[in-house]
Structures are given as structure tokens and as C-alpha cells.
Length: 263
Image 1 (tube, rainbow, N blue to C red):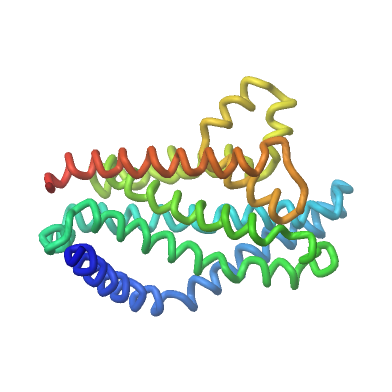
Image 2: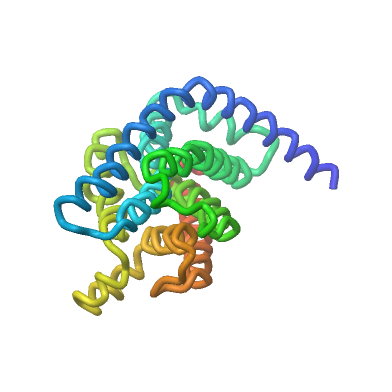
């Protein structure tokens, strides 16, 4: 029992140091988020509605897409920082030699990445409310569901960052990470359309989309925001996300252990 408290104390100090670094970046990240969400939601709610005669829910639909995507965009930076450290300073070996299990330090990274994603996404709903105003009915939002899928998405993106870092061989390979992995996951995961639309176009594409963890994050976020059940139930979204978190966490630890040769 004493070991557990000792481990938790070390993790607490490591997280505190991480949060101090995040504090320095937070304002600039919020400005970036404001520009991104403002452009996406504003265009969807007003220009696309005027151009194509889409419904008033289009802005809320893309607000859900932004909410689901915020943490995913942090993955590239996390992978870059990890791979850069593997190749240059290798400070990770210092942390792996701390008197805590190596796997616990890796779990600390996932937790930090998750906290980072959660904090980065907090301004999205207020920004969306200002832009959409009456089109976004806060009373219709299922806040409990939104909190659940939001936290699970943040944890998922943390595990994905570790998994991708374990496979990237060098910084030269980073140039392919966005186009070959992150972008297809994001864009084919339902950023622009619902899973139902994909399935109606082609059942084969619909079933293939179910192999993409981002699909469940997108659908779950929209269910929570719109207050209506989607073609994929919220329970399925949560269950599938938990499964992907477990698989990616276990596999990333296995691959990192092989790459970094820790015990």
C-alpha cells in the first residue's frame, strides 16, 4: 500500500511539471482554437446554409465535429515531441529510471495528453453558442453524455499518440504521419457527414467506417449535442471507444517496450 502512495506522489509531481509547461502554451492554443472553430462553424452555419439551403442544424453538426476533433489535432504534436526525444535528448530514459514501473510512467503520459485535450476543448461550446446563438439550444444538450464521450475521446487520443510514436522510426517519417494516418482517420471518421449517410451510400463503406475509432467519437458527440439518438446508439459509441482505448493502450505499451527496451 505504501508503494502505491509513493508512486502516486511521483506521478503527481510529474503531472504538475507538465501542467506548468501547458500553462505557457494555453493562451496561444485558445487563440488557434477560436480561429479554427470560428471558421468551421461560421461557414457551416451561414455560408453553407445560404449556398446550399442546408438546415439550421448544420452549424451544430459541425460544432460536434470540432468538439470531437480538438484532441485529435494534438496527436501530431505529441508524436513529434516523443519521436524527437527518442532520437535526440532521450530524456525519456531518465523518467523510465525513476522508482516507478515504466508502464505507469507511460500511463502518466496518456493522462497528461487527456487533460491537455480536455482543457483545449473547453472553449468550444461557448464559442459555438456565440456563433450559433439560437441555433444551439443548451437545454437540449445531454451534458452527462457529452462529458462521458468528451473524456473518453481525450483518453483515446492519448493512447493513439503513444501508439503512433512507437511506430514512427525517425523524424523524417513524421512528414507522412498526417496524410497517411491522422487525416484519413479524421476525415473518414465522419467529420463532414454522419455514419448513416456513409452507410446509405454504401453498406460496405459504412461497415468499414466502424473500424475507425473516430467514427464513434463523432457520432457520440453529435448525439450529446443534438439531444437525439443517432444510427449508432450512444451506448455502442461508449463501448466501442472503451475497446479501442484498451487495445491501443496495451499495444502501444508492448511496442514501446520493444523499442525502448524498458522493464
